Image 1: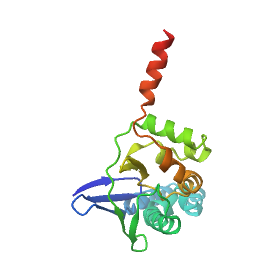
Image 2 (image 1 turned 45 degrees about the vertical axis):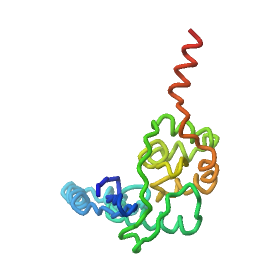
Image 3 (image 1 turned 180 degrees about the vertical axis):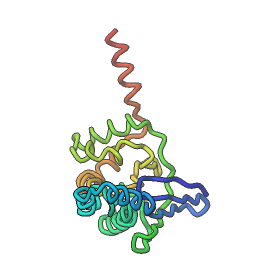
Length: 190
C-alpha cells in the first residue's frame, strides 16, 4: 500500500487489490484558524464572502466539504456516462470514501500531455482553464496503452469529458514526444 495526497483528498493505493480508496480531507483546523483571524480583525465582509462562495470557488465550504463533493461527483459522473476515458469508480459511500480501479500515474511529460490533449480538443477553453486536471500527468494513467483520467470530480473536467472524452481515449498517443519534435524542428532550422 502507498499513499498520495491531493487538494481535497487522500488516496490509499492497494496494488495487490488493484484499487485506490479516496478519502476526503476536511480542513477543520485551517478553516477554524481563518474564521478566528477574521473575527479578531472584525472582517465580517470577508467572512460573509467566504461563507457564500460555491464549493467550486474555495471558501469554508470547499475546505470542509470539497473532498466529499468531489468523491460523489466522480462516482455519479462515472455511473451516468460510463465514458471510456474515465478510470472506473466502482463504489462511493455518499462521498465519504470512493473505491476506484487502481491506475499507476502515467510517466508522460506534462508538456506532451497538455499539448496533445489541446490538439485533440481543438484547444477547448475548459482544458486550458482546468489546468489542475489536464496539465498534471499524475491525474492520468495508461490502461492497456490507452490514456484514462483518474481525477474527474470537477464540473469543468466533466464538460471536457462529455464533449471530448471518447475522442481523447481513442486518439491520444502516449509515444508522441513533443519536446523531441520541437528540438528536431529547431535543429532543421539551423
